[in-house]
Image (tube, rainbow, N blue to C red; front, top):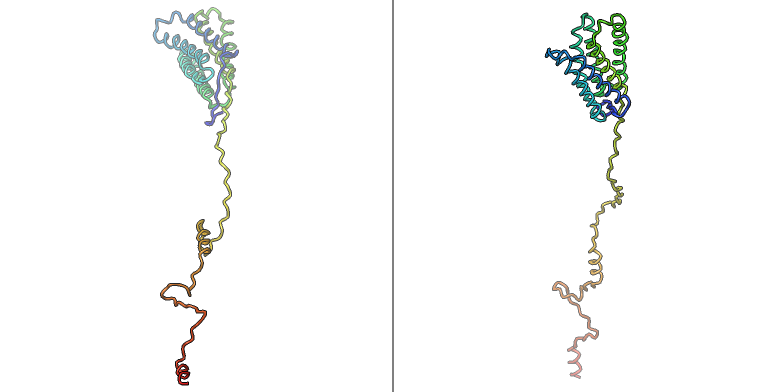
Length: 264
């Protein structure tokens, strides 16, 4: 089953049921052409009772052989055309009740077959029942009693046409038996690029009032330490008093003493 909820059916053309369906459809074409030899004069009968069923059988054979693996859902097209043929054929029945019941059956066949091959119906087992029961009814209720009771009333042309119809029903029964479910596609995991593990960020120190030290700060501090501090005493600044120390101070001359000694 795919994402839309539909089941994909396919038909293996090399399988027993597929090959049997192809053979039965080919036989139906032959029986139809033989039984409708005298119908070519009437254009409507030639189209609806000869060309249309032959075209349906050929298209169905092509669907089995060419589209059995991938596009077998397109087989609903020849089946719908075949339903048109059977509806037109039922208009010639003597009983209108028989005609109404047959038309209802043909419409049901068209709906169920189309819904199955497209994938809306998730099982194939409705198709064998849908085509198998009418086949048994035709053979057991209509054909055999007609041959037993009034064999003279059954013409060769009518017998060939009935054989063609029976072959078509049997072929559709084989198709229903041969259908297989296609396994769902497994999604490939996407290769996601491995993301590198996030490195833990180092804890940032709390902000302090002191300015952050840079790489140049130690150099400046070293230079400041190596330079001697200026001595305010020896500084040449005009605002700094200059003090000199004389180890031998000169005492002031006492003039009074000199004069006193001279007088003496």
